Image (cartoon, rainbow, N blue to C red; front, side, top):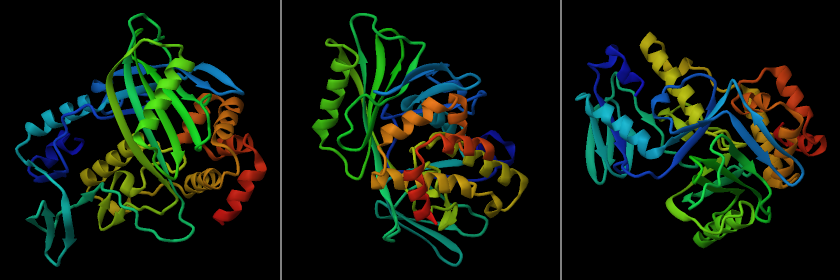
Length: 361
């Protein structure tokens, strides 16, 4: 989408390969940013006040100059594919990529058993398909898995001016668990049950947890489910690099923050960097990697969660209790200064994190 905005690329040929046609509202992306973003025109809802809830601490704060934004999957797909349809230099291929490899002068793809060959010279291949490839005994693998319902109530029960970004009052029996609740209007909201653990739940358990939350914490007994979504995000200390077999982007290229699962905005930053370097004719291998200190912080926190040195509920409660929310958002965006990092790290329980940090070394 970024490349298609520039006349410099109108004579270039693009092949976009995806598993299936994207025509369902199968997910949402939520993120915060200060300015209008690249996809501002399709932001579905935005909030400048957010809540954090736990048994020990609760807050409701304005996050300006940030705004918490939501993009629906169906709006994103329509926007992108309408634009792509206006560019005849883009070819779309749908199907399962069974195999792909570089040969001396050819890039070889097998899609649903059919072979596609491209000239290797002057061709860039970007791959966003994540496949775990490390078998090191020190590799940590957790999954952030979630299911959400958009519900509608017969009476006005929601405050559309405030989003609940983390509610840790739910039980923590299976690991770090929270719910977020995003109101669209007074009668409609997305309720998302989220869990960090090593294994997925049986399908019915997500539904039961959503029902329990809606009844016990929201006090809602009468509602209609109008949409559902479900997904999972890998949380790993595996080293995922941009340069590799082609150029790795998205989760495959390390753009999922290991300690939180946040991905959307990191992908936007990487996409802009790639576009800027291609426009300037700079080699893509010169794009700077994520600063090592953020990688270290993420791996340390991931180790704490994986070894259960400290409950995730406790970690995030202390993080939000002892720091300005804007500082927390900058830290989670990998945009904080080193002095801000020290202040935030100092606000967390020291012994579990020192123990985990030692293992990183």
